[in-house]
Length: 225
Length: 303
Image (cartoon, rainbow over all chains, first blue to last red; front, side):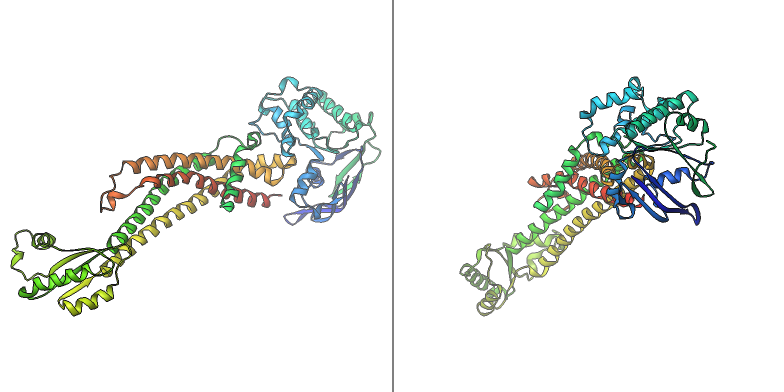
C-alpha cells in the first residue's frame, strides 16, 4: 500500500534520512522507534506525501508519488488516516465538525453520515463531548478524537505520530486498544513512539514489527523488544 | 453577454454553496475587516468617479448637440448697406436646405452680449458693431461651404460661423474629462483588487495551521481556496454595497443639474442611477478573482 524504495531526505543541505526502504502490507502493524530527532515524524510525512523525498521513490497504493498532481496527492491522503501528537484541530469548530472535516473535504454529505458519526463517537467514548471545542478537551480526549477523524473515511492505513505522547498510561493503553481494533478490521497501522512499554503491551496482542531509525537509516529492530 | 454571465454565475453559485465548508476558516480576523473597509471605501470613491464620467459624458453630448445645430452669420458692412445685406442674408438662409430658422439679433440683444466685457455703461450703440444673425440648423445640418459661397456672392460682408473652431476643443475637453472619470473607475477597481489580494494573502498566511489541517485530511487546493474565496467575496460584496449606497446618498445631496453648469450637474440623471448599483456586483467579481488567484498561487507554493 505504501512503498518506499531507497528513500533519502535532505533539508538545508544536511541529510536527515538515508536510503530507506519499506513495503507496508495490508493489515500489518508496525511500530517506528528511535531517539528524539531521529526523523520519525519526517519519515511519516514522507509516507503520507506531506514531504517529497530528495532521492528514491514513494508509491502510494501503486501510484508513483512523483507522477501524482496535487489533487492526486489529496485523493491519496484520504486513504491514509493520520494522527498527530498535537492532533491538529481547528479550535473554532466543535469536536463533531473537526471529526467530520475529512468528509467535508472529500465532498461527502456530512448530514447523511450522522449514524456512522454517532457510532464513531461511541467507539472512541466521546459521545458526550461532541459539541465541545478542542481547547476544552483533555489530552486523551483529543487523541481519541484525532483517531476518530483519522478513520472516518475508512482509510486503508493509519499513521500515528506519538499518539500517546501527552496522555497517562491508562489512556495510552486505551488508545492502543483502539488501534489494535482497527488493525483487526484490516487496516495497516504505523505508530511512531519511543514508549517501549507501549510496544511490549501491543506485542502481547498483535504481531507487530518494530522499525528503528538510527543514524539516519531504517532498521528492523531485534529481539530485545 | 454569456461570457459575463458565466463568471457571475460562478460567484453566485459559490455564495450559495455549502456554508459549512467556509466555516473551516475562523470567522473573524483583521484581514476580513480590512477587506470590508477597503471595499466600502473604494466603492464610495468609485461612485464619484462614475458620477464624474457620466456627468462629463452628458456635458459633452449636450455641448456637441447644442453647438452642432447653431451657427452665426456676422455681417460687417457700411451703415448704409447693413439693412440690405441683412435682408439678403436672411433671404439666402430661408432658402438654404438644412436651415431650420434664422433671425437677426436686435440691438438690445447684441448689447447684452457685450455687456460682460464692456460694462453696461458703455454706449455700445456708438460703436460700429457687425449685425449678428442667429441660425438654427436642422438635425441633418447644412452644407457650410456651399452657404459660404452663396453669401460671398450675394452679401460680401457676411461671414458664416458654424462654431466648429471653438466647439471642437470644448467637446474634446468634455470627452477627456469623461475618459478621466472612467480611468479613475478602472484604477479604483485595480487598487481594490490589489488590496483584497494583499488582505487574502495575509489571511492565508495567518491561517497556515488551518490549511495544514485541511491538507492532512485530504482537502484539495480548490476546496481550501473556496473557503477563503467565499469569505472574501462576501465581505467585498457587503463592503461595496455599503460604500455604494453611502456614495449614492452623498451624490444625491449634491446641487442639482443646472442648465449649463458642470459642477452643479455632477451626479446621475434618470436611468443612470442604476449604473452605480452595478458596483457591488463588480466589486464582488473583483474580490472573487483576486482572492482565488492569490489563494491558488499561495497554495501551490505549499507542499
